[in-house]
Image 1 (spheres, rainbow, N blue to C red):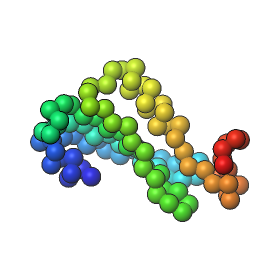
Image 2: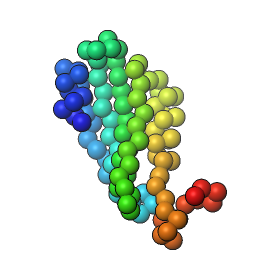
Image 3: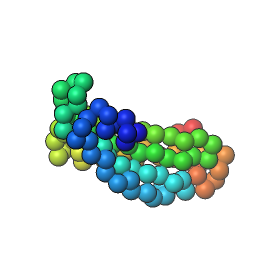
Length: 100
């Protein structure tokens, strides 16, 4: 992914992945940015959250084609922090009430 991103942007930056465990699942969270995308002529910033679930691998991302404000950064990092995988088959990984 970093290679593809770098191909679209000569000055691309890929932040180091932060790894953790959430709801019993391994997660990784990282950011990639491009000051000026060659194709769009705009800056781009994308945050990624990857989760290794019991049966599947999930990736959620939020992308901006502009420089996000501090408020947007706070809003979307909180949102990505809240994204989680749950599993009704595993008591230790149960879904919050109302989600199935």
